[in-house]
Amino acid sequence: MEQSAKDIWKRLLEQARARLPEPTLRTWLEPAEPVSFEAGRLVVATPDQFAAEWNESKHARLLAELAGQVVGRPTEVVFRVQEERAKRPQMDFFVAAPAQPGATTVLTQEAVRWLASWLRSHFDLVLVDGPSVDAATELAVLLPACEGLYLVLPRGESNQTQRQSAQALATLGGRLRGVVHTQFEG
Image (cartoon, rainbow, N blue to C red; front, top):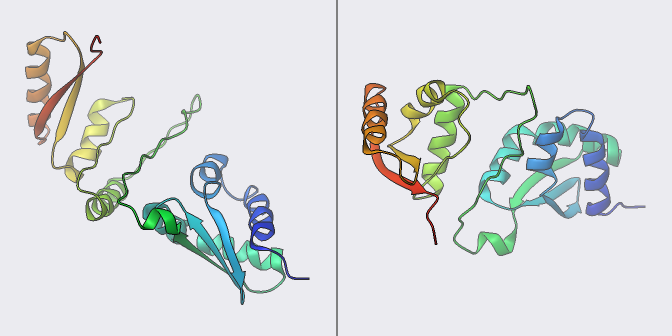
């Protein structure tokens, strides 16, 4: 009896749990939806082009191996953008799960450059935000891949803090494009 794409994908995710970290499954694979299974090819829809390309490059080979076990014959796993999302201009938000205590994630400069290059080729403006663990290290990795940075400060922060931050950024070779103040009263 031929299995449905949905059944294969469900079993495939169960198998992948033993081989991939849980945050990877939650971030990249669980949002994807099976579309079809025909002639040894499982087509899976992703929310956007970035997720499709990421899954193709990072997970397709492992998933094809696991799918062969699930289906019982060689199976290709292909990622595509969901049709209704492919037809609209995309403005996507990538939200990371809260960091686990004691966990660290390090992206190499090569990975950051690749990501920045891909984002620039798909979007007009890319904003990266996150809690700073070690601002100097983060800036050393991000600056070579950035055209400039926006300084985000709480409302009421002094001009001296802005000048000091701009000078520190310039020392590292960065360009301050602007200042954004937070905590406005409405």
